[in-house]
Image 1 (cartoon, helix red, strand yellow):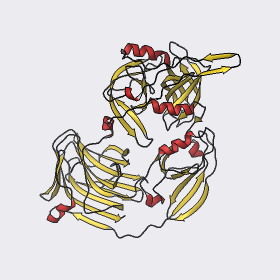
Image 2 (image 1 turned 90 degrees about the vertical axis):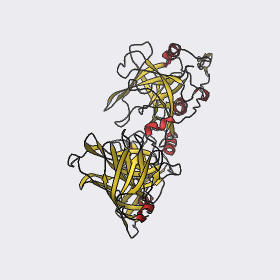
Image 3 (image 1 turned 45 degrees about the vertical axis):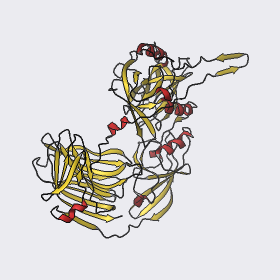
Image 4 (image 1 turned 90 degrees about the horizontal axis):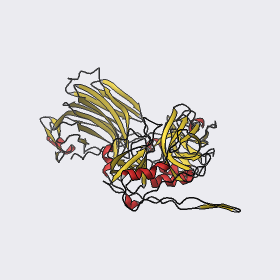
Length: 543
């Protein structure tokens, strides 16, 4: 009845094997002169001590300083992966391109100027070329057989608090991986706190093979993925950046298609903003290709260079019209080019009869409408005029839909609930399930903890979650109020959440357009937790 807890922070308990491409020895020549670059070191055939691993990495590791136009310096650890080239993590681009790049080489106290060959926010990496070229030692990359859950690894990089000092290290164990489904990138998790390291710090095994680079998420980007993207950037592609925050959607009723990515954010003065693109638009075509995923957009960007014009098609909904427009942002650069309107299509909203249902939980026939029974996590039952849900495990949660109702578009659910200490209760609207089992939903809930009430709202699209309303104390509501009346309504793109008659949140989000309603219950470190719903009222427009 109650599904097991699947928080994002625990997703790193899966396992993946990483395949890393070994660098090849190459040579270059000019008339009457032949220069052979040193062979790329291979991982050690025997296991090394951590001090031996550090001795191999030290000559290939450098500190990179990006001077950002608004945010100041951004420091990252870089690793020499090809002659004269350093691989590192992408710096933030919200304020524009870095104004300068400097590299502090191993054993040196004076930084040297460097050239930024390319940045790919999609892949999360940057490639920096030393000026003039310096033949640093190159770091060996690992192979799939060298990566497994539970193996000993070393985190090696520069200290976030002592940027002028020598690299630091800390032993760890691989806990597994999680997949960033938005970018189709698997990221490696380890068992230690990494806040003391600069981004880009290296994850290495006992054979001195580099397995990954530390991302801002606290996870590691596999070296194979980073190297494949670096080979493209090393050609001098520049900033492969549009200045857009994008998300998949599940709102074909609004946009007239289930394809495309919704624009959530636009970087001020960035490429997209200068081309007239605004939040709320749907990006449907890029370079003549119908867009289905963020990873697909990244692939298209890699085929271009900074400064290229990129024709894109967008949709914007205004009242009863769907307006199709075309923009031509310049990759990595601002170019004020107005949008071109291609056509306007009517967007009539079908007339449907609302469905209204109320449950008081004192009629026997209502038992068929709600999930009941027992599981390892908890129980659900209708008794004493209430829907009673008990969670037997700490940090467990449950989603409880009324089984007699189908999916709808506009929805409103009201519930009166008795909520104990260290528990949360709330409502879900527009809930649907992806083929892989992940969920799409809007959730607003109230938490009773520490003698106070807090409210929060969140969103999940294809299993990727985002906070719409951070946990907010409900100062205007008496914490002793029992039962609490909760109300959550979704109409077109508007969300309204009320607690005890007080408006807690008014939100605008276009990502979800349909789905089921449900109740939500969660426990916080205290078991058992029993939540009672005394009455539930639902209004919805059938899909």
